[in-house]
Length: 348
Ligand code: TXA
Ligand code: MG
Image 1 (cartoon, rainbow, N blue to C red):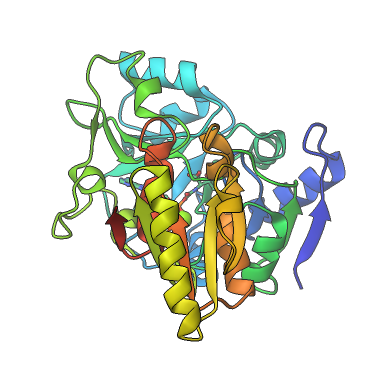
Image 2: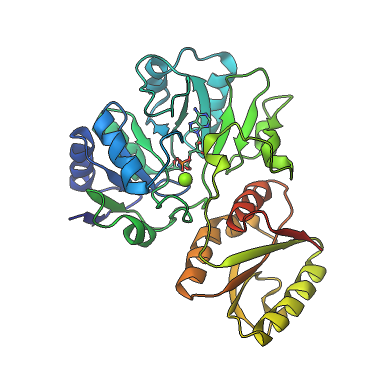
């Protein structure tokens, strides 16, 4: 049996936090909200608990987990060293959607890091998460709380869908805010390198560093480049239907989608269109879901995974999606869309 408890995200109920913390301390698995997506949490110092996470998700063992802390002080025992740049990052962006890769200390099990000598750590900006970690008294290891390969959960109902009966508790704290997973930033090398784009953008990081790069695999179309972050090599976030993403000028995108919908519909296919506020009225065929507004891409990030899950429920045969530009959060949106469509991005 999985306990599902609704918690107040501004003022989390003490008894719920304590029940969750007790389960974590005793080696259980508890799903909890963060500001990005829901996490599937376990005591980072308990190897059996970590095993349970991999089993519940069906996750490959070589894909490492992120450690979640509730204060900067908790980082020191987990890492080899904290330099000035790392300190600056933590002070500026934590709590928030930034995961930092450090060289790990001996306290961190290789089970957590997929055999790597580095460890990923972040402090989430969500009261339920912070109080749960604090009350557990240990760092919480947590991947996103979806079944491996499915879109990450941004609402408790998504976690229930994927994890009910497989874990001890789900804390429902409503919809998450950012909607895409945290930025993963590698600080273990000379130049800070983004291994996964997310809520903290390249532009944000360039406010404190003169140079920041993207891992080659993020910006290149070459499928042979091996991503430095193990998780990026897997096909992720995939809806059940085949998906195609169109990029280019908005007018041309809609025109192309319209003609595709027409011919697919004639073939008898059920077609889903991932549209935006600005374009939704263009379409008069297909099942149109609005993912957000082009004038505020944060809204697109927030709804992306939910809309992918909705298309699954609607049992469409094909999803035609409008892409966005890669400025700011757009880079993270396009990174997730690329995974969802298995790389089928058409520049029109
Ligand atoms: O927003 C988030 O980061 C969410 C919430 C729950 O905190 N968590 C999340 O975890 O997205 P997960 O496990 O789904 O993704 C973690 C990513 C994976 O791509 C993994 O390969 C990468 O971080 N990662 C973890 N440790 C790493 C390391 N030592 N070096 C490189 N990449 C690492
Ligand atoms: Mg994930």
